[in-house]
Image (tube, rainbow, N blue to C red):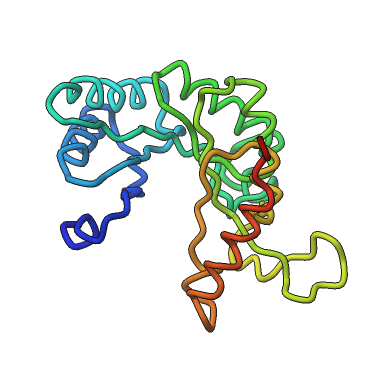
Length: 204
C-alpha cells in the first residue's frame, strides 16, 4: 500500500467486505485509516444493516483525515448471468436485482455501487445523477473486428461492454484489469483504451 501510494495514483481498495455489521464496520474503519485510498467496497448482498454499519464507520472518520474514501456497494458480480443467479437462489433477471440492490445501497448511505455495464442506465434512472456507478466487465473492441461492437476475450465475465459503450451509458469510473495486464504490450493496450474513452466522452 505504501509503495502504491508513493507512486501517486489513488487506490481502489477492492476488499469486498461481506460479514456481520460489526465486523464490516471494523474492517471499513481500518481501511479508511490507510493512506491513498479513494474507494472502498462492500457487498450489497450483506444487507441494509451491514451497509449502514459501513457507512457509519465512514462518517465517524470525517474530520480525522483530509479526505475520506468513497464507499461503494457491489451489486451482482459481472461473472454471474441469470442462470448462475438461479443456482444460488436469486430469482429474476440480473438487471432487476442490480437496481434493487442499488436502491438499498443508496438507502443505507453508500456513495455509489459497482455494477455491470448492462445496468448503468437503469441504476442511473433509479438512483440519480450524483450516485456513483463504477463499472467492471470492460472489454475493448477486437482489433480489426469486422462487426460493430465485436469484443475481445470476455474471460470469466458474463455481462460486458466496451469502454465507449460504458462511458456513453453513463459510467462514472471503469475498472479495467486483464485487457491491460494480460495484453502483450500493456502500455499500448492502456493507451488504446484511453483513446477510446476520450472519444466517447461528451464534448462541451
